[in-house]
Length: 96
Image (cartoon, rainbow, N blue to C red; front, side):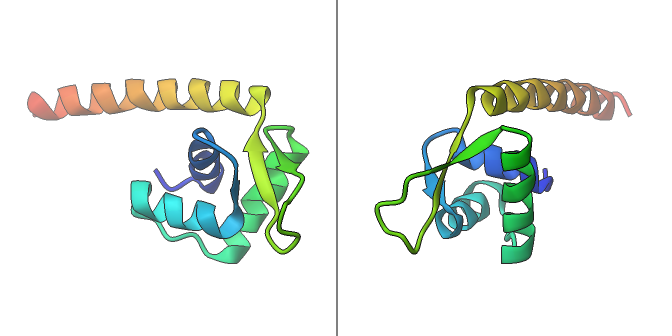
């Protein structure tokens, strides 16, 4: 999975994070290194859609973000669909 939006939402699903913390988390769990342009482009799109929101920063240099209820619902739906695709693909590989 390399869709930046899904990676950002997955990262925020377990708590608020600033950009650099998301980049580190995503690299840890997905093995994907997002560049700053890709990350902040995804953050902008997710904010516009109402799937994440900025949280008041304690440290003004690092803006933290949180997933919204709508973002959580979108992520659940997308991951459920990906899970179906993975299960079908793996089952078909066994029979190939």
